[in-house]
Amino acid sequence: MSDSVAKKIYIIRHGETDYNKAGVVQGRGINADLNETGKAQGIAFYEMYKDVPFDKLYTSTLKRTHQTTQKFIDAGLPWEQLSGLDEMAWGKQEGKIISTEVRAEFKHLIDAWNNGEYDEKPDGGESPNEVCARQKEAMDYIVSKSNEQTILICMHGRAMRLLLSQLTGRPLSDMDHFPHQNTSLYILEYADGKFEIDTFNSLEHLENLKK
Image (cartoon, rainbow, N blue to C red; front, side):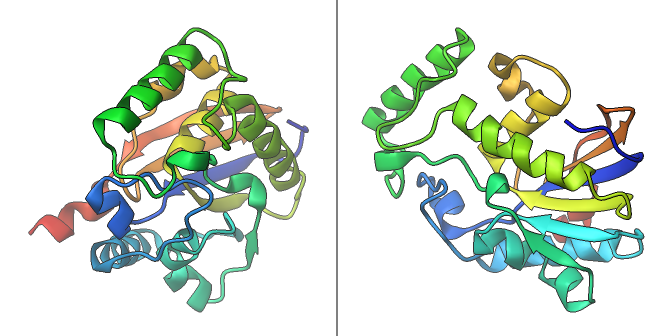
């Protein structure tokens, strides 16, 4: 990553979709809308963090990230879409219910990745190395903006795990050490070319939804 001014970066996963709820593989090729729960999660996040002085919002190109942060967009926060923040492409698995067969394919991939085989990928999809290459390009672009100190990023589950591994200097085989639920929040401090996690997988903003 390029050196730039110090930044505080809030990274959240998008809200719930019907694909998430039904246990269907989503991925980069599925451009699903949020369901009502997902919309409520996005609003709850906005209500808790609307007073943070964000300079910029970055999302993936997929509308579930746009809809999650819609209240910030409506409030006038400058917004940019970056394809480098898109979810991993799961290829022929996308749109499939997580069946025994799909689980077996998924386990094969996870085992390969855990063994450091980061070029392994689903049929028709992307490898961790391919995702990380586009993420690096996106993050180099983001940190190069010297007038943006406090940043909100909305992206996707598997992509978040890969990005957090990459930013914190952990091997990609550690990606599953970064849990995520819909609208999970990680806050990172960036200075002198290094990222450190300040807040790990916070769901505090969803507490009111449980009442």
